[in-house]
Image 1 (cartoon, rainbow, N blue to C red):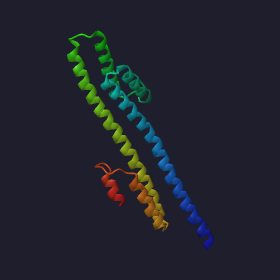
Image 2 (image 1 turned 90 degrees about the vertical axis):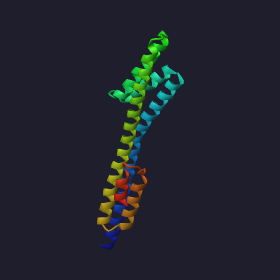
Image 3 (image 1 turned 120 degrees about the vertical axis):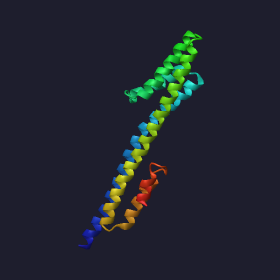
Image 4 (image 1 turned 90 degrees about the horizontal axis):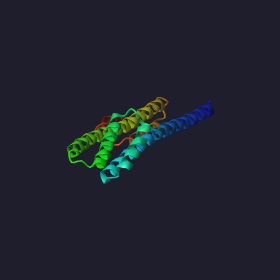
Length: 172
């Protein structure tokens, strides 16, 4: 009977480690798409700001392939297209239109980047909550040292900020 408990305990430890690995891997896979979006947006904005409007258009089109319904990206692309048209026509009356497009694009960029960051934070919080449930099951089995290690891993995956601080406090 003791041998059976020992095997069950080892199995539980392996299962917990496997669950943590799966949650961490799925979380990092989700992060890579967000990282790609952030990278493309950053490259597009840098290209636009440096005057390389064609490169900016290209990066924004790549971004639209990932998120075709994103109005912020569409708005920024429209502004870049407008800047390209203004540059090609080189008309003086288009300067006011270009400034208005630029302001609208900046607003869209800020909204887009804030939304991406909120998505990233929410995914990390969901993963931390899943890991907390694993730790609760471990503590119910009486495996308190493993449960504490599991909770510590959940806390480490969260960046302290106003959105995550309540969850971090709950985990502690």
